[in-house]
Image (cartoon, rainbow, N blue to C red; front, top):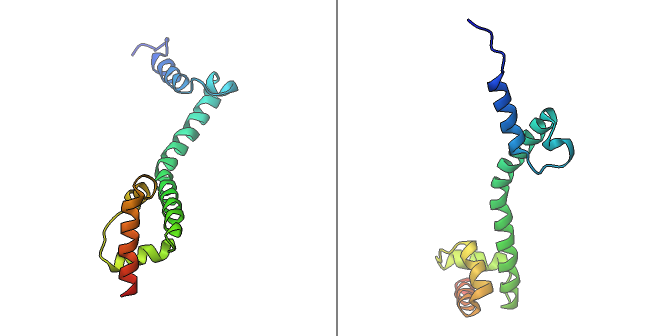
Length: 119
């Protein structure tokens, strides 16, 4: 078999890595060795943080719901317990949206939870 002299596979691989690290700071975008490390790390962070984003949003929704329901005179935990007793199935994303955008509907939900807790 003839000896490969142009190294096209190797060149294409390096070019692909350097293209993906375009915009990175310093040698991380131009030096293959550091670019490869930077890209590996950034892809790992991206994968991890796509999972973490879901928890971040859940925390944000809970903060918004808690702030809105305390204005109604009930804590977040009591609100959730009341909704559970009243068999109201609504997720935190929707509750947070109601708390910020439609306060009248949120007040009705809180009243329903309060009445379930009173019984």
